[in-house]
Length: 587
Image (cartoon, rainbow, N blue to C red):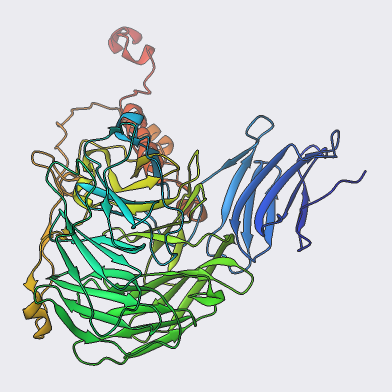
């Protein structure tokens, strides 16, 4: 018998399953993604089960236990061991909890699309030519902005808190003087949108409280650099100071930092050797980092020097000349970038912000779509995906090696054109929703909720919801920031009123059990001594594989069984019967 194996010519592995009539192979598909195939000798020509896994260069080594039908998988350079239960019935392969040396609370995150009544439908004339440096989508607590096609550079601004089907006809929009290149909401003014154009102008639009009723071509204000007409490609508002805006420009490849209150350019960072793909402010507001076409990550402290204080490089950070994204992570200790390597494999790289050293790079898959980034600063959960994808990759970012820990990826039913994260205050913490994003498809703006399964949802999960940063309130003016002031952002507790926290319940002492009076005989005590209940202990090597909720349930059952065992008496019935008096046995 002969059959075609995996599509990739790379190495593969094979193992017999129980019964000697089935085979399991591991290898790579045509897109270099790792996969598992199950075959039956009675129908050897094609596998009866194929499971695709994440892209990686490590060959999956299968370890199979015929007694328990458990399959353990691990590859070279992997940081975790996956295990599956093999079944005769569909779905044939049931994945267990991935074992690693790190406890991840978000390992089993679940993405749930909103009901159609929560979507904005019938969205038309989407712009397909927005430059790769822009996500083509922006949102805040109330509004979501989408680029539309047509002359003049149109942007639709819709109220995502008032979903529904858009009426037929032309969608009211902001009409700019030229093609748009990027746009962003002012974090401290919900109704203010900044739009960059390829003629070098930055238009500011004040959105009416009731939304746009008709199209307008008259911006509230416009920033113009009279010394240059270089195209502005990226806009980034300062996270703590009101009126500070960084604008990345093409041609000269520089970063201009505006004081929009004056308005004028205060700082111009030194030119980069090539195109700037992305830029981002640190959460503290002191530093600005850029990702360049040459693969370099540069960190600036603009108020002290226009020259980069640190420079790091990698083959994947911005390599391949295809574009990338950059974001600060984990209390500004790390910098995350996305990009491509020389063979167009999409990659995620981690840099240290202390010395710009490359710490790790992982490959995802081969695709021409640029990976955009949604990062939750509270939970350190990173979501990445690209235009035309239907998979959202999820990782937890940590300061411990290897810094990127895979979570459960979310697969959508349709492909999307863009993703944007919503402010944390919009999350429903009662349903353990820790992240909420808006997904743009071909004609729908769909909310997507990410939750963590928890048993005790009647309590506030304070281990998942630390005090969040108040990103919608400025802590200083532009004049103060340019003058050298540094102030941390305010924080806010997400705990709803009248909802006790989980930690409070855990710290509360257990209720005292009422004293019980038990009369036992010496024989009974002797019997209990030799036959007392022994609690089952989970083997140490399996503790990391058993979910916390399962262990807690098992513990409760064992406690209940132990209590019932102590109530059982071992004395015989005849021992409790009254016999004749001892004197009657005498003569």
